[in-house]
Image (tube, rainbow, N blue to C red; front, side, top):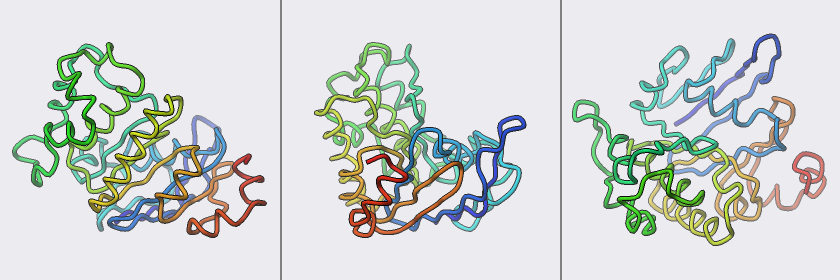
Length: 234
């Protein structure tokens, strides 16, 4: 589904990605791991067209995305839940979801509706008339996920899925991610909760200083204490 090959990015004169390659297959959950500042967010921003890459390729469902505007990439079926959530603070919960719905001309089908988002996150149904600015951090993250789902993504990307959230909210979001996986949703996610990632994700990529230094399945990562200590600080 997603094929990233030899991606290179820089900010000004400083190069931050050095040949990053990764894959996500249909229905697969894949994590991108590493300490802060290792290039994880830059990688996902490059994939969805928010950060320019000067070398490499991003191919999604057979289509090269290099040079495409981010709104066109969303229409291809890539949905991003960005770090920091970036919901619309002056719009209600329902309005935040409604504005993400594709236009009739560009719809691939309405697998995700507001009602279905409310089923996934019942708290949002209770706060449907509340402005985004009135929500807690956890509720805002639920809304950001729901908004991304409303774009009808074939691949959902979550950057820092549960960072900084209360334990009960984190548990609710991990439960939702497990439900999405059970429904066959392909997911690429960044998070620091290795226990949850080892349980849910099929495969993992570990980044260090703008490079992928390890990739493999959950059992191999769980059994490699040296790898976890060296690159994840665990």
